[in-house]
Image 1 (cartoon, protein in one colour):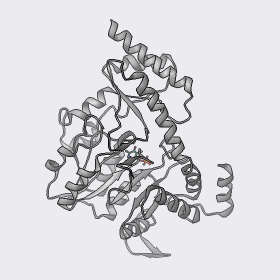
Image 2: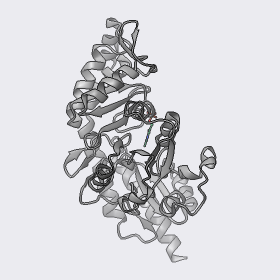
Image 3: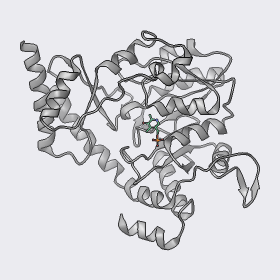
Image 4: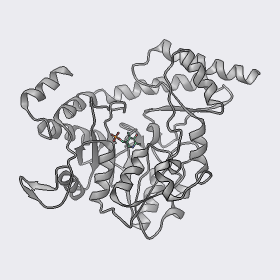
Length: 354
Ligand SMILES: *Cc1c(COP(=O)(O)O)cnc(C)c1O
């Protein structure tokens, strides 16, 4: 990694430049799209995609409340209004059965989120969107390498949005993001928007922004992309051990991998009723854990003005109350996986006996 960083330093191509172009080519090839456009972050990938699709004030954009805040924040930054559809209770992604009733004459785009690395059920979402002439933007920030019916996510909607935040399955050594698409006119717009609306030096055909991917991040990402499939398979191995060891334990719900899915296990979230108890046991065993996400976005203070209240999206709310993420990263050692299993199992088996 230090070698490629030095190469970038020697070349002086720090903002855009050929390291970015090379990575864009590699990443679009990996995702199976004609184009990939490197941008400043996953949040920017979402925002610039919506800008390129003409989303703005007066429009509505549908997404899910069980996601990272940025999905919804990007909608707000365009001036459009976020509208929520609850998630499915098994896949934790947008429930297609609830989608149609959320569509109005103002709906301009739909953003399913491939949460935790599990793909959303894209076919029914694309069918409904197609019928109404609405764009589908994939939030694939947690799903590098995830597949839906054999096809890579990021290649299914009109655009796919990726984050390269360091903790993601494909992570930079700082901030970064990308948009994938087969649509060359959208790609051209996003390339322009990420660089101040410039068509050539000192010629600005529209207002844009500064959201350029930098050369060092691109060079590191190109290197790490070569290991992405291996790392995802290591994540899948850890997940398989959790399934085998925990499937018969009462008092917890494991994630699923739907028939249509190839899961990349960005996050392994179990559901437990007494979360605090299991978190305590993990703390005692010095095992890392987290909650993604304890407050669904419709109940965040920032979105009080949308007028939603507790009870509006019961599946997301129940998940928020019960989710607990346990370690699933590729470098996890076998004995560490065993320690997680023992801790969770002992905790729940003891609880059941009392
Ligand atoms: C990480 C993430 C983002 C935002 O990406 P950044 O690169 O941090 O801006 C957006 N959506 C989801 C679902 C994410 O997990």
